[in-house]
Structures are given as C-alpha cells and as structure tokens.
Length: 290
Length: 332
Image (tube, rainbow over all chains, first blue to last red):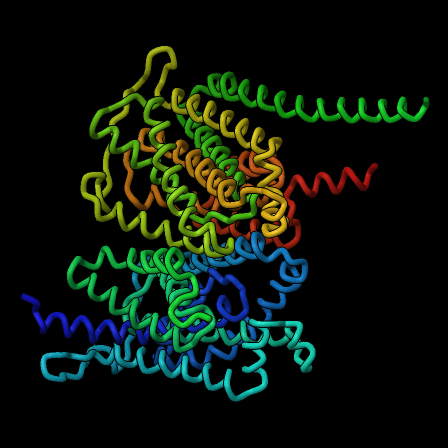
C-alpha cells in the first residue's frame, strides 16, 4: 500500500525544494545556457553567499536574506570584473574551452579552500524568525524555512524573465546567445552585454547562498554537491529556457525528495547525475530546448 | 647539385637534433631511476619512500590526464573518481581473492577504463563542455556509490593489512615505490607513443577543429573514446597500490580534492602539448608539496596550488615548457 501521507508530504517538499533549486540554477541558465560560459565555480559563489549571510547574521544579527540582497549589487560588479578578466585572458583568443574550464575550476577550488581556512570545516547555521515554524494544511506541513526560499527562487526567475523580455539589455542577452554578429548590427556590444549578464548570474548565486543556509546548515565543501544539480537542471530545462529551468528544478526537487523518503538521504546526490546523463544520452536538447 | 646537398645537410641536422630530443628524456628517465634506487636507499627512511611514491603517483595521474586533456583538449574533472575505482577494485580483490598487487593493477586499469568508456560513450558525442560537466558530477556519484556500499567499508572506511617486507624488494614501502616508478615509466612511454603516432595527431586535429578533422576522415568518436579509456585506465592503475600505501581507505581519502586538483594543475603548469610537460609539473609541484605539507598546513598548500594554476593558465597558457621554448626562441 502506498502511504499517501508520506507521499504527499514528499511531493510538497519536493516542489518546495524545486523552487529553491530555481534560485540555484537560474544563474547557470544565464551563464552556461545563454552566454556559453561554463562557470563551474557557480556553486562556490553560492557557498560564498551562504557564508556572507552567516557572517552578518552571527556578528550583527542581520537577517540572512537581507544581508545577501544588500551584497548582491557588489557581487554584480564583481561578476562583471570577472567576465572582463575571462574575456581578456581566454574568450578573446578563442581559448575558452580547455583553459576557461580550468580557470573556473581553479576559482571554485580557491573559493572553497579560502572559505575552509576562514570558517573551518564545522557546519554553520543562521538564526531568523521564520526558521522553525511551519504552516499545517491538512496532513501536509509546510515549513517556512522551505517556503520562503521557494518564493524568493521563483521571484528571481520571474525577475530575470521580465528583465529579458522588457529591456533592451535583456533582449540583447538572448540575442548574444544566438548570434553575436547580428547583435552588433543593431547597435549592441556583445562583450558589454555578456559582462552585464554574467554580473547578474553571480548576483543570483549570492542570494541563492542565503536561501541555502536558511534551509540547512552549511560547510564549505557541500558546494560540490550542487555542481551536478545546477547543470542537470540547466541541460534538462533546455539550456536557454527560463520556464524550462523552473520545470526541471521542480522535477529534480521531487525526484530527490522521493529518493530521500524511500531510499534514504545518502543516495540523493546521485539523482542529479543520473538525470544529467540520461538527458545527455537521450535528449540533449532538454525539455523546452529548441 | 648544391641544393639537394644543402637540404640533405639540413635534414641531417634536424634528425640529429631530433635524436638529441629523444635521447635527452631517456637520459632524464635513467637519472630519475638512479635517484629513486640509490638516493632513497641511501636516505633509507620510510618517509623518503613515501614521499617519492606520492610524487611518482602524480606523475602517472597527470600524464594520464594529459592524454585526453592535453592532446585532445577534453577536460576530465573526475580523475579522483577513476583513481578511486582503482583503489576500490584493489580493496575488493584484497577482501575476496587476495591476488598479488601486480595482478590487481591490470584489473583496476580495466575497471577504470570501462568507466571511461561508458561515460565517454554517453557524453563525448556532444560538445566537449558536456563531457567535462559529466565528469564533474561523476566524482560525486561514485562517492555516493561507495558511501552506500558496506562491503568496501562504506563511509566508515576499511583497513588493509600489508606485509612488513617482501622477498627480493626489501621493505614493503620500497616495493610500492618501485611499483609506482615502473608504472610511471610505462605511462610516460605510452603518452609519448600516443603523441608521436597517428593516434596523437588525430587527437591534436580534434583539438584544433573537430568538424574539420572529421571531414578530413579522422574517426573522432572512436579516437576520443580510446583516449578516455586509456587515460582512465592509467589513473585506475595508479589507484590500485593506494590501499596498501595508506593501509586505511575511506571515501574522503580515495576521492580527495587533492588528487582532482593536482591532476589538472600539474599538466597545466608544466605544459599540456608534450609528454614532458605533465612530468615536469608533477615532479615540481609534487616535491614542493611534499616539503610544504611538512612545513605549512595542507589546506594552505592546496590553496597555493589552485592560485598557481589560475596564474599559469591566465598568463602562461603553455606552461613551463611553453615559457622555456619562448626564451629559447628569443635567444636564437
């Protein structure tokens, strides 16, 4: 017999987890899907966000989410600077494949070890009013610490979608992923557009970090578990598609909570890899890919 | 008749230069062997053997990585996973049939080679970045698999007993060191053979322009698969003696970040386009780390490797070998 109580709870928390994964993966959909920059250091920036939230929360009692929203503009400019460096060192020479990958790998590694040296290997957590209480709907309980990240995650995807649809820069981001030459003809500078988009991508990672530390305690090396997840979501969603990202994030969230519920939490890191390999092997274009 | 004569002379000069270029590394290898055999015996401590073992292990790993990464331009982030497949094949053999190490290593190589073939078959048909991303996730998955597999120790790890000494070779650490030395010579010879053959030229063509190479008749997928399997197999073979080296294996040591990072950093710092680059990178960085781990913390020491790697790929993309070539060109 199926235990409906257990199943519905698993499904609901799967959807909630999926909403959080939207926040985690939207930056990769921009950087990898649209700009073709294989930023494997993305999860490291998420961890950086988590520790920014941790630092301001424990030292000054600032709300973790607020801390990261304030930090996001700085991350945006940091991201622009990073793209500038990446462009000058690799992309300009067309050397981005091997050297670019190794560059981001080095970055991932430097950030992780850096956080390790500053904060140590212990699990860190934050305190806020919404961590703890939950809403009861029949036999399904929705904890606020999962609901808030879902709302913020979906709002972030919505904001990026709105930006991409309504502003010239946003439309140019989509154009640069299709045809940088044509973008030049209508008066856009591909390098500048990519710089802005990469800045946005890094800013979303920092905010996602705050959401992560709200959901669970973190230590620097758990960022690696997210590498498989973000790329699985991006590829499954169809690379450039924001609605695809949301659907794929939800699917992964549900798949992971079902595995956790029925097989145990130690198997869940393997799910994203399974999805990634299956997508690459069966339908590399993803769900909503062109 | 002076023209052909002159060109003959040029060819002869080129040949002798090439002969020097092939003799020099062989001489270097002989020196290395001499150092390991006599130098370590002269020092005589276990630590000397262990340090040499670690450096030689990295020579194998970075040489193996370079067959796919350097020659074909496909970045493999899962070196720790291939290494761990070798480690755990060895653990399984130890817990079941107890074959001697020499017989275990080919098994480990086959297991890791098959893993490379499988992952390669699924992802190598697509753009190179997908292969790299899949390998990134592969480490996490293999780690998950081992953590959940109680027979090989799970997350708690497993103890491996090794004999104190072995006939003819003396202390077991010395024996391990000699095994790794032989394996590193074999890997370097394989890498060199690949580089100089049609296989290596095919891979280089793929690196430059895959579509053009395929149009010219290079069997792209088959070459890439062969390179992935070969590179994975060598990494697996390098992992097989590891349980006897550390005597206690858990997922954290078998899948350690040290291996993943060093295996990529060493070829990139040494230079990826020739077989000598990874060897230079491994010997240099490996020995430096052996000294640094003793004097400063190991985390900081890894941070230095990461920073060095980023500096090199940004400013000297052809590594130390590239820098030396540039200096030579400027002189002549």
